[in-house]
Image 1 (cartoon, rainbow, N blue to C red):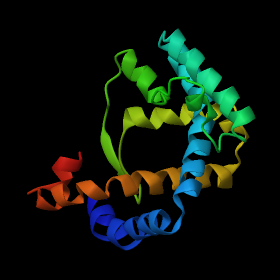
Image 2 (image 1 turned 45 degrees about the vertical axis):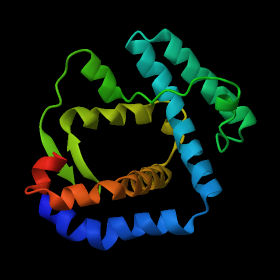
Image 3 (image 1 turned 45 degrees about the horizontal axis):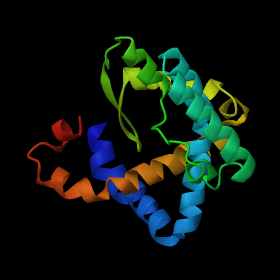
Image 4 (image 1 turned 180 degrees about the vertical axis):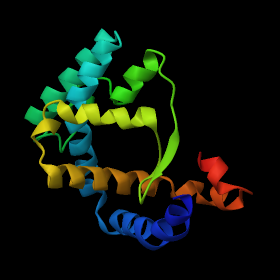
Length: 173
């Protein structure tokens, strides 16, 4: 699977699409899309922080969600940061199970998307929280694809390090 991703899917499909998205999408639109997608993940972060015992962070995620959803036009604008509400990294369900001692588990490659561990697969639980549970298959796929393009574009500066590595697979893993 590594060869499929590294030798074919990434150089001929994933990287060019991701770079085209970055190069041809104006920064304000990309920022709005990123804000909107991050806002969709806030309710999951509320629940996951509560389960981990991080009440303060859960309240901040809740406040960010309702403020950005209401005043930021469904999250397109990050009004909560301007209002002084701390922006923490979103907590996925895999963070919860890791917090309680579950190891990463086996490592595997997802075609076109990259490396995953078994623990990261538990992040599908986050899709059951509102508002993500309202997304149909195609909307969920669009969210996944947009997030993937943005993540892949952020990896471009690290490509030289990967290419210089004697074993890119081990470095990626």
